[in-house]
Image (cartoon, rainbow, N blue to C red; front, top):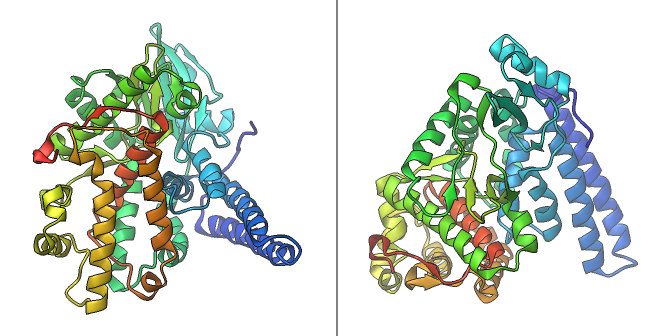
Length: 437
């Protein structure tokens, strides 16, 4: 794979790159309008999506950082984007062009005042894994194999300006209006800034691995502060294959169930016991060991769940509360899904919309066990997403709905459900959190 010797770091350089990418997309649309005159609308649209996805991804992977991270986040929700975008953007999880070895060595000199060869017994300057915010190198110290994560230069400094550039697109995509819409972008910005702080990630990693070490069939690396800094993080090198690689070939249902149960228990323990959660559940953050154990990595994106959000959010997962109209509407106001300035039409529309969504998404909590291989369940999720994305009524209304905490909680459950479906995990014990089952 071709390496990168420099990354656009200034606001002007990054904006120029996005403009040139936009120009390519414009050309693709011109081709599309011509092609649909001679070919079918569906065929022309599929080609447009494929070309746009490739051009946008090619532009973002050179920028790296928050722009690429947002593409990765969008790829996790398979019901929002066309399949061409999901396939291309999902590469941001663990497959982007790495930094060149000279740039890696320069980064070490900046933060440690010495080259990696003076810190480790051996250090491979060619990365084994490159993602949106950093890349991983293998090193050896005192006979122990280590994974050294190095953050791309300029990523932390460009987050605010990157988000400002994509904000108009995001507001249009999700139909967000109104002066208080900034709270959603501020939530994403704060989380992305946290993800670039490897000192914070070190602290979070140690806390979560210690708190969750009792969970069966899950492993965590050990982290090493002496070989880490604000932009470099060193941990044990964990051998295994990415979860997506494992699910692509695995035919062992017992193995799928075991890993699925470990994944579910890991998330439920965090959410219900710790009131904070690993809010980045994509395949690149999980490995499967040779013994069929789940390996959890990367605790840069942790979402703390305030009690005044946690309680109404999960009380609405209870079947009897979904069927209690007065209680349901009261909780929608509490979660800021309904607003005091709503029209009667908006109250009716959003009450039904969120009742449809919550009735479906809370299904796993309504029984003692759940079958995540149920294609019908995930088909209903896709159908629901498609139905509301095409709703003309929704386009007329203010989509600025819900507490800012929904962004990462919904992202967590979307990602978790997708991972469980990819595993085709069956008979997963849900556990009786808050009396939900």
